Length: 108
Image (cartoon, rainbow, N blue to C red; front, side, top):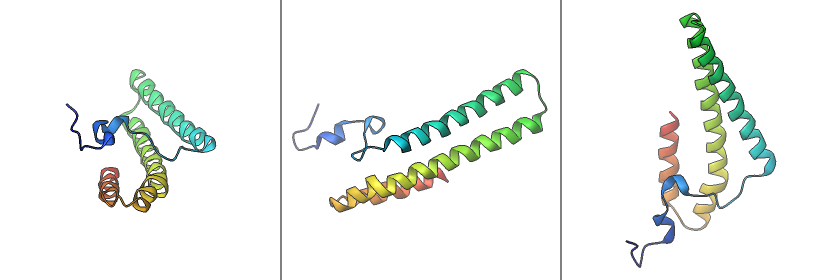
């Protein structure tokens, strides 16, 4: 049940929130390209396993995927800091700083 004094944004689950500042089309394209490369790498690992390839070679590719994901995470974090966090601070939302620190911890 919705509480009367509760902001509407709190009723939305974290996975359903949207950015207030939309991504530029070019930025969206670059992010999608990165994700597609990562998907390609993962498909390559799957093929290597199906082909019974050498464990060391598979582990090298797993490391490459982890690195690519880490890099993507830092790009998203940078965007988050420049848009969502900056906008939140300008609007007086200091809790967004704590959220940003927690997100950094999750990236390692």
